[in-house]
Image (cartoon, rainbow, N blue to C red):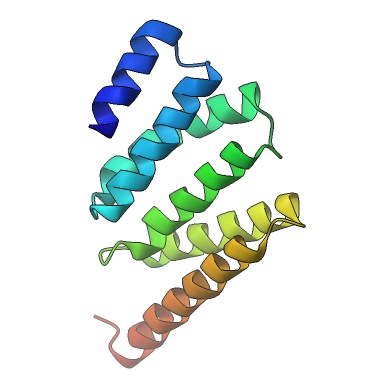
Length: 128
């Protein structure tokens, strides 16, 4: 359903429309909830630059897209160390940009760092 809404918004309003970007964000959130991480990452890689250009770096929707992107990276059980590093870096940068609305981002950053530490610890115990 969210994919259809997003596709319809793109068709009728264009990719640079604020409502289209909200539809993309909702679609990405649903993909992460469904554990379709690759699709979420692909979508967000496409729409985040548009959101930054149209809405600005500090807009709530742009920041939320970055947060959801990081979540798609570190929730993925197949995430690589590079993915986890990217998630932490994305959340650190987002937290810096968003500072007074960072409580939710701080929680995501804490969880992403924990996932990174767990993977790094597992890699040192079992290098395979």
